[in-house]
Image (tube, rainbow, N blue to C red; front, side, top):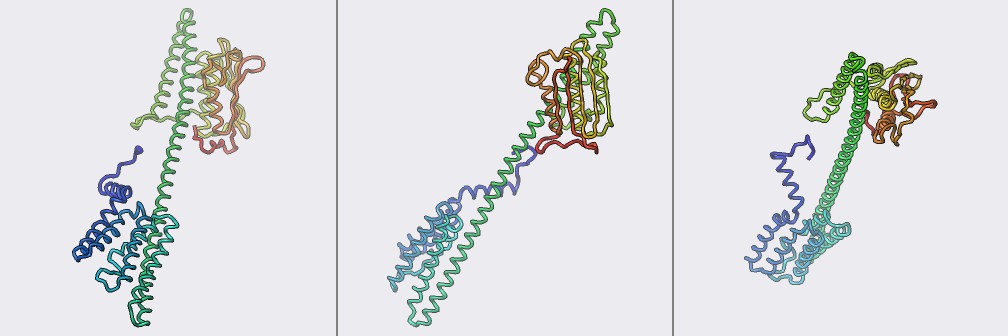
Amino acid sequence: MERGQRQPTGVRGRVDASEAWVRTHPVVVDAALFCPPALLLAGIFASSGSPWQSLAALLQVGVLALRRARPVLTAVVVYAFAAVHLLTGVVGRGASEALLVSPSDVAVLVALYSVAAHGPRWARYWGLLVALAGALGLGVALGWASTDVGEAFVVVVSVTVTAGVLALLAWTLGQWRRTRLAHVRTLEERARGVETEREQLQALAAAAERARIAREMHDVVAHSLSVVIAQADGGRYAAAADPAAAVRALESVAATGRAALTDMRRLLGVLREDGGAVFEPQPGVEDVPALVASVRASGLPVALVTTGEARQLPAGAGLAVYRVVQEGLTNVLKHGGPSARATVRLHWAPGRLEAHVEDDGRGASATVDGEGRGDGVGRGLAGMAERMALYGGTAHAGPRSGGGFAVQAVLPVPASGRSAPPPAGQPAV
């Protein structure tokens, strides 16, 4: 049972359990329903000195215990006993044990209902035809005993119509029951299909959320550690000649570490179920200047150039652009070398936003894996492309002509300021 659903309890739970038990044990239920009247009729006939009729009643009514499990067999047995009653009554007219109709012949209606509700198509219609033929035979047999022709005709018509109407009513009820059972099965199958689809959607949502958190973790950890490493190296080199510079470097390391720890707690907090997570606004394009300033404070010369008329972006699209710039600067810190310089350009064109991160370092000659720059295990540049693709944009990275490395991202931005929505079936990141 899914979390958030409560197990049915009390009267409702007991009713549901009882209905399920009845559906899964039809023979037991029908035996409990029809065996008592079968024994009662058998006892009545036995006490009146009719042992064969007692046995016939016991079998004709008792076989109804199989009416749902074996509807065709049940109908054949019940019809056969009813036919024997009719034939022996006609042949042995006047004998003490010769009965045209036995009380146990009421089982014919139950058998007809059951074969209409649970039997195959051919058995449903044959059962009705045989029952109507039996009604006609019963009317003729009873009318045959009348000496007056008019009275015999009335008896034949009245008995045949009455028995035929009862047979049609039982058959119609069986058909209605069959239709209802088919409808219930359809609803159950549809419910199972919806449940399966819901589980699949949950699995897809969980996978998408894991991918989102993995991208966020990569961006936070990679950028923060790159800044920390750059500051630590700079502080170590400057410790002997300029202690004040070393102190500033350590202060920057501490500030960066605290910021990274806060981001990590925020990301991991959404995974907890205690409701104690504190949510903060995600960074966007408007936070790029602060990002450039923090990287510049780590010792990397970075210039920020913004052209065009800036427009408001949705949170997800703004975060995607921010992460692209962050990843580009992180790669410069990691691979650009000690004398690298970087430039961040944000160009607001009429229908798009272009983000460029370029450097003149030695990163172009560094080992490049299939996913981007680095040690062969990074997913940063691939993550950038995934982020931009969610909003209809593109991201590319590669060596610059003349040296250095460049990262370029293009995001469609309509004039209203709303970027293209994520494709159907993909979550906003």
